[in-house]
Length: 339
Length: 287
Image 1 (cartoon, rainbow over the protein chains, first blue to last red):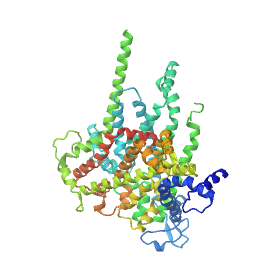
Image 2 (cartoon, helix red, strand yellow):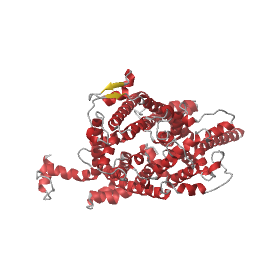
Image 3 (tube, chains in turn orange, green):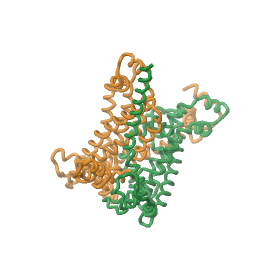
Image 4 (cartoon, rainbow over the protein chains, first blue to last red):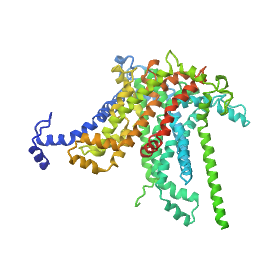
């Protein structure tokens, strides 16, 4: 500290807007440029992340409606009771304001739809991505071409075009039924509008887009030295043993990474459910995704306080699950200690 | 000798089977997309009666009727809107994310570790939690109905993925050139503009590429903030084109415009494939 302030006091350059205190001037001079470069990000972080998060936490305890913001009232935990009241057999309750509020009959449904979607689609997608990555990680010709082909669904999957297409594929007279019909099946349902199957078409759509996980797995596989496999072969290990004893353990950090990324992404799925359900939750709310329900509450019914509360619960769920995955990773992820 | 030939034949057959399997799976995977493209050239009444790939009759009528759009706005407008939005979004992300990345990767400053950790946390933060307040905020500014709520955040480096991608890349650049430049009297800004940015071109291309794709495909923000058909982007327009209950009379037109809407992604993917792989492999961003 002393030597630094001495250095600055020697310099004749004045730092503008800063009181003439040597150590402060030195501090500013050392950091100003970096913070100028960081300025856009900092403005965005505070203005578009920190402030909105705090504000939405606040809103979650109110009945805010953006068409009449002046009549906003604090309603305590009512929005949260509205979500989870059905767990305790409630159908309505009295808010602190004296108003009788209805418990949201669809909230638990939307939560279970999204949880089912996440817990089924993410593991399936990762298994599929890993299988294809292993398949493509051989010394074969045309692998870059194959990789590109397998990536195409991921490239296009987020688009409205594919959602539109998906709806057509799984309709009563869609392409899928045309094929199944040709194979001799009769009495086929309209998958997209059947309450038992609609969610599965969306899960399939998600699994179909395994491309980025596959590319990450491929990059991970390339890091595993060939010598390990050669040594294992010499010791008489077959391909399956090699996969479980070498590939899986060495790839486990990549699996963890993919798992976290895909899980967080899957919880936020919205577009495809919105298009396939025609802006609503589909038949019997079978595709009422959490985010879709939140959107409908917030923007169709103007219940923005409630939508904020839903967003915070979603954040909490994702946070807890991510923490569990990271905590559990010490049991199943091989960090290559001593490598 | 004989056993050697047998082993060779064995490898040959094994490779052949692997190729056959990979190709078969690949065909199933992209069948729906190919079918959509081909069906967009079939006459409207034959689209769903014919699941095959070879059309019995070819027409470009779907493209003509689809292009007309709706509400007096053609798809020409929607495409121009989308392109314009993407170009500005790319400029915003390139400037703001590379600035933040330069600070994190190459500059020493008080609080660097702290801010970097914060940036990494925002990487995992689900966007929905800021949605309502952002909407309220933009509504107070009078921005709802314009492109500002979608574009202004791009100039504030809110896509932490790209900051992370660029930091990773910039950290790997050799220090020597930079040091030489500083000895020659080059300022930090000069280093950023003349040395780091040119060297970081591959990562900047990846950033531009994914910014384009995500902005082009984004639907949620367009649904929230774009209110008039004249301002609609392709993805927002397609959704209205298909309709709420799916009661579309012109499926041919819908498929034709859907096909057109994926053309930019295709072109970019096949011309810039290595940047895709690089971007995904280093940060795990979803494509």
